[in-house]
Image (cartoon, rainbow, N blue to C red; front, side, top):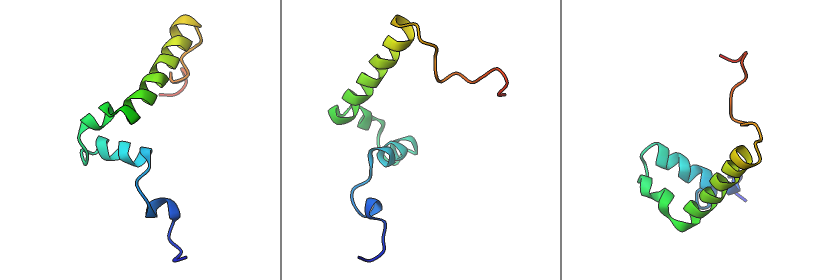
Length: 67
C-alpha cells in the first residue's frame, strides 16, 4: 500500500458529489438522477410523515438559547 486514504483513492462519495454540486462544480441537475432523487425523496417523505402525521417535534429547529 502506498499509505493513501483508500476512500479518496476511488470514486467520490455521495457526500463529496453533493459538495461538488453546492460549489457549482457539478450541475444542479445531478439531484434529478434516480440514484440520488429516490433516496432523497424517501427521506423527505419520512420527515413529512414524522412531523405532520405522527406529530413528532422537528429535530432540526434550534433551541431557544442558541442564537
